[in-house]
Length: 216
Length: 178
Image (cartoon, rainbow over all chains, first blue to last red; front, side):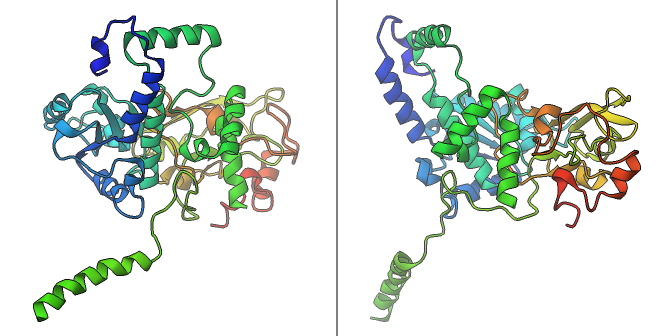
């Protein structure tokens, strides 16, 4: 994604990969791309109560040259699409895109000629966050899932080769990186339960069960 | 002197915050409870014997302002029974990339089959994964419930189910009184 693509593929990168990915996820600066009501929730996420600074991303960069993550918050009109693409092109690699809210993810309830039916028509999206608008916890959850994905990302051609060899040897992981809800991933017991349920293909039922227990 | 004290006073305001209670939530470790009627992901409920409450009437799909719900009805027969009454939903999908969590589908549902939970951690990295199928939406089988298809256990006809719904809510318990 970044400099590592220029390295020869024979260079051993296994622990460097862990370190590089950790630095990438731990200092994850977002570019603001607030377009509508989702931007209000995005601002709340950066403020004191939810405090995205806990995850090393309190500075929302107004300049795309200093940003790693573009949070597309709100509906993207046809007129805004080229601007969005330009901002994305100005961001340095490695870069990620989070599509916040249903309008950015798929057009949402605005299925009409004025709105782009999902920003993935314009830029590659790494995480889709539903909700109208999503609450700040949902945005934090999406960002933490993206962290999980970044940590598992192979570094360069050598890293991809090693990942392919590992998957051929052990098979794909039961829970794909970025698929587990954050409140489960950050709790050891819940995490094990989720992994077990995912192996049985009933993780969504587990989620309803846990919610029913809490409600009682 | 007065202007000097004015400047110091403002530092005092900042300093006093050192002794105030912190407002930051510890989200991933200890999530705050949502409001009790928070609109989260949907649940397709079951009767206490395990039969599905959904009758495949598509009223939720018609009520949906974002066209996020897809329902396909199927006919129950005596040896293949999924819900009391004539019909059941043979296919049921909610597209969370479209759903705006307005709750109109919940209001439209005539059997309290569709209700909402307070779960909100729904982000995924592909649009395909955001389309929840009937298997993902259906409530888990609680103790005493039996996996459909099976015969009606709580009455001779569907009327016994519907008329007893208040005292026999199944997994939608609590949603009726709200």
